Length: 446
View 1: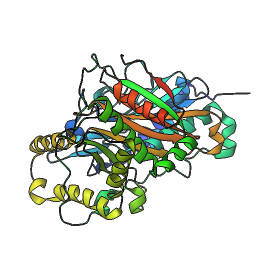
View 2 (view 1 turned 180 degrees about the horizontal axis):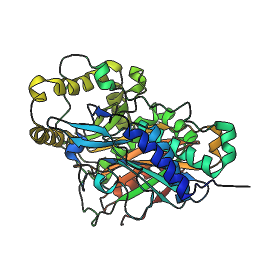
View 3 (view 1 turned 60 degrees about the horizontal axis):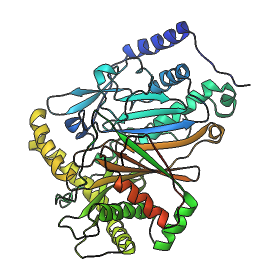
């Protein structure tokens, strides 16, 4: 028989009171932002929230009371989420929050909205639910996708232990062995003084058109059997990432450029998780941006030619030496003595200008968060995972990839009315014999 454990209001209040009383007896913890995180509070706002969403779909409807209890239990275990953002004289910094966890709410608005800390108990993440789905939205200043998945996985595990107490006999009631709480600044640890390696600032071809109004936000998922996709990628001699990026570029080339030459390249930013390259388990941000570039200068190209160009472009960058050069350039700028003494308001002006140049050098961003692994006792209760990014300057259509239980999900997030790029992308996959199921939140026209 299914059972759920719900604490009484008195018990829950007593647990929270005891926890925060203990916190009050200690010195308040503070922490520096990592190198990448410094940018996000500078550029964040209503139109560019710099949040990402990770969601888990369960096999049964979500119980909001249990979800709130699970969050109250899990949050104190995660120092990297139990933080508020402070405005210093020279830099932003983190301070231990210590307030009660933010309230879990039913989703009634569009995703990836700007997180206002003063309306969220000063926290930089939110948890919502909708029917079978639990949503975690994270301000990127806290962590990248790896840290976000750590958190929502443990939140889901704790929720399921409350919903099905018999699971505890198999798993215990502590964090799983696959979860890390490490808060090392791996950028600083692995920084090397080398020759400058600047980002490309040449303008890319940008996808333009009528945009949604009133904060509307489009989401479109494409479900692809992983085994089929691997077969197709093998035929082209490319990786899954290379194939999906190529399909996106191919769609832009055909749907927007109509197969004609362009004076600007189609350039896709591809975030790279640095942890495997540098033996890191940090939950702070630890990634850099590489880019796949295709510049159509002739009259006609085949998909095979596009895929080969993308393959060569990405593989030339996927080595630890090159990746180290990229983030070492960023860290070297942060460490310059004359920049350290510049007040934060002046730093913000310079950082916004640099960001605009680099953002407009990319047509879009496509990120692959990898294969999601779930401990065996919980698998029967979890149906699917999804993830997607908020939009940014010049990039009003982005892609996110993840794989769970033999299915790869490619998710478009967008606020462009014209869905031709999405249509062209999935048409390309279908032409290669892939069976794709498409689902959207209904925010699109045409």
